Length: 536
Image 1 (tube, rainbow, N blue to C red):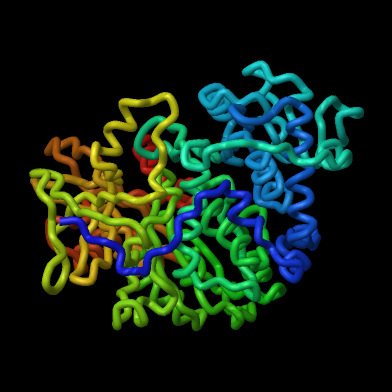
Image 2: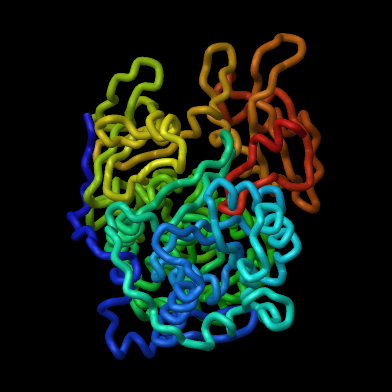
């Protein structure tokens, strides 16, 4: 049977995302600092930010950009990104956020598929942006370089060209329930990237669903290193923090020393991370050199985080660490653990290996992937493993121009089939096992790569690890292969790694092959790119 959220219901917004975030801002909050760029030290108040958002929307309208148009946004984290993103939406257009690591070919493919008529980028990414945009026919005046010299100098409008005239924001009539606000593209780790159609209602709903659980306030300082172009950073950091009137401490990219220094210098209270950052926080000696005492809570998402690793980070930083779960198609959060671990909600603290409970105004199911039968929450312990399904107001409108993929993902009852394997306990708390398509089948047994990766990361001489299934040339069977990054002083052999895993798992789960590499390939959101390892 389906299991509903145990969280109290929330009011689902019926306005545009802009109005939901900013329409009721008070004078007191308007004068608070909203955005801080760590690489320059520049601060932007809520009043200044909203004025810039409106001016940018007005400038886009002057250029004929509005309802029905798609604008590409290709930039690392910055206050300019936040303003550009919300300015695009305020103009009535749709923002398709482009991965800052994309090649020119990748950029061209997304601009073509989304039918973007304008691209916003920055100087640091200009070579690939220009090549990609020009290859799909965008002219110079349709390629905005926010920090460039300006249209009179090189033909590309810059931020001053757009904001300087201070054109009033246009009057826009949209239906928040159907109008597309954002068009991020799925990561492509299990197939070709697809445009994920997220409406204003989707994005605003997810902020409303997570805000009471996160507990952020206007006095909080939130470290923003997760990329805003990814849905995790877009909703959980950018939009939710702005709704809370908190201060966003913005990092353009991850660097451990700068990450730690930003926490110390800006007295950050919360950080949102992906598992690769947790590995560094647990193992790197640099952590001891910084005063991180202001951090009260860390949330990890984007991929499963092992309980032992989570406990190590929480103890080392003397803070609470919890997990959440989501995906681009869910705007993204579907399950989350409150920072008290669930004590007030349920009366007990969820294990750090769980991703928490279904968000408000939503329901979940776990389905046996072999039989299609529903797996009920057990009276005690954990249920059997099955695919996690979810239904709520944050479920995407569908995949752009891909009705067949949409129908395969969202069923007739409105449940989105996540493709992730999970278990549930008696309270409805969910535990992610692994991706359905990434399970390794060894002699008929199911072996989750994430479980073996968690074991490997407990070894003191292993800095990072990933596991995939490969075909053994002698037996013809699929076997687990570990890719291992040694610590700087590590002295491990392949036999050492296989022996260590064998001592900690069931016999059928043992690693059968090992390769040592310099770094584990990962997406910007922290997911292991297993497809890259398969070619290694």
